[in-house]
Amino acid sequence: MASNGLRVASKAIAKVKDKKAPKGGFQGIEFLKKYGQHILKNPLLTQSIVDKAGVKTTDVVLEIGPGTGNLTMKLLEVAKKVIAIEMDPRMVIELQRRVQGTPYQQKLEILQGDCIKMQLPYFDLCVANTPYQISSPLTFKLLSHRPMFRAAILMFQREFAMRLVAPPGDPLYCRLSVNSQLLARTSHILKVGRNNFRPPPKVDSSVVRIEPRNPPPPVDFREWDGLVRILFGRKNKTIGGLFRQKQVLEMLDKNHKTLQALKVGSEMDVGDDKDGEMELDEEEGTGPFKEKICKIIIDGGYEQKRAAKLTQDDFLQLLCLFNSHGIHFA
Image (cartoon, rainbow, N blue to C red; front, side):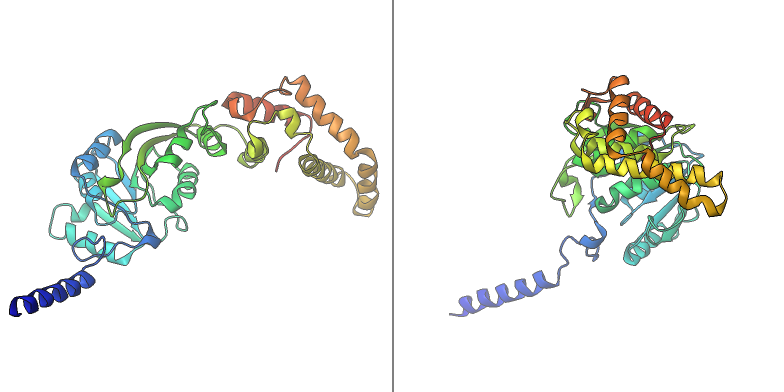
């Protein structure tokens, strides 16, 4: 009877301990899903990322979401300076604790806040285990950053990473692929299994390298994205078919008339604005406008082509072709 009582008591104590232990914690820290916290725990992997990043002793390195600092400490061993942006105040304290009293303390600058909302500082290289929920906005925020940096080595959810680097004709080739590859050279570096993280995410990850094109392409990105958005609405449909859709034609016709009205209006007195707009409405109708769009596509040789297999040069040529005929997408 006494032994049974001891067994019951020991089970009760074990349950209390389990309740107190933080799930997925590290040194008493509980990792929070709202911050997308999945900490790299494999030291060989963190070293491999730093090696493949090509960090120089003169580099200022930007790290997004350093967490408990496993990757940060490896970067501090090589870089001139590391600027770490972290939202979670608990992680900020953990980072400060890890470098306190070490030679790395003077080399680390910690900025607490949302990297998407803040103005990024100057940096040569960005190396980060990216919180997955900010993958796309972070990528394009980095690519719009000036002055330009040398490269970004970023950990992403594997599917996002493979879409980022997908070539024309690949099943994953999409608007993200086209837009990112317009602004940068992208390449896949290595696949990372989910068990390299604490807590492990539900999917595998990949590390990619992003090198901004310098100088950037002479393209209005809003125009470019407007065209790409239409083409990838149904990427396997012929371009001729896409541009015969009523919704697409109406949008382009509206843009065309607005730009013409602005052009004509700038050449007339204010009192003539109404007459100018009326003349434009009579001049351009849905029927003639559709014929104009179809002629541009057919003459350019795009009638039977599909977005899924177009290269960057194909998209650029098509955009220039439309623009030269006064057709705009933004």
